[in-house]
Length: 394
Image (cartoon, rainbow, N blue to C red; front, side, top):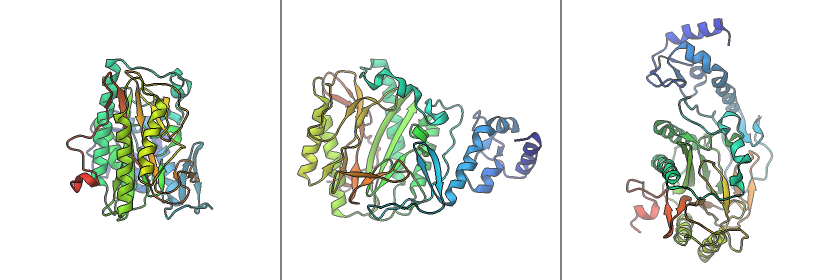
């Protein structure tokens, strides 16, 4: 941007109301906001001075280009963002369709971020020995991870309070993003392999990795909200599936069975237990309730990296290698379908849906193996909004 153009934008901005918000670049009280963001109706982009605005322009202007994607059916792939003027030809398995996707939300420069925040590639994760070797964390490392998990839990609880008919999943993304910023955390999904949002929201037949968009949640929907916080160099990962208003009995049963399968698996975790045993426990509970377990996606190691060893499959008779040891940190996150376990990928390269269009639910906790069993680092708090059976006293 030329100096003349910058001066013109400054003159235009001076006629606008003062923004009471921290500068995106230095976190000082702001006096200006980007006029282009105002023009496009984007989230406010406050800056304390023209100098900060100029310094941030090279990165900030990308959100203006991204905003143009919302004009048509926009989607994100693992190779980068693309755009289609009309809905792409695809054999949709259920009633859900993608809606317009807003631009990625901005993260102030003072918030520490993982390496992939820059260009979408998690170089440290790809190159790490932790992809093959499972690390046993020290007490000091576990405390850092515990902090990240607590932030993730508090943010997920904020998102849960916003779930209701008429609210868009993009609004859920805003709630999550703002709560992360307030906590001084980076939302781990943002730009991970070019994922364009700060949280995953998976509705009805979406199994996982749904991209928040402008669709309003409807009475009777179910939605999984998957939150990960990166703070102090550690990731904290968890998710829950919520009922949107009043849902049918079949969906309630699906949600409860998924939650209970997860808790049964965690209860069995302790030193010496094989990773493969987790899938047997989950599958036994799920099939007894008439549902099926997704085989494509699994739990994973996590800590200073978003994803690493070990892999934790959720289905029976899997071939996972290794046993649990004290200090190991990983997630268990079963995805349970009302019909077939098979999944299909939407053209966006992220959204995984059930092959038969029936509903799917998921719950996730991050745990650490202790001498006596497992400590749930992302456990629910006394202040956590009740799940449907808790609200009804069941």
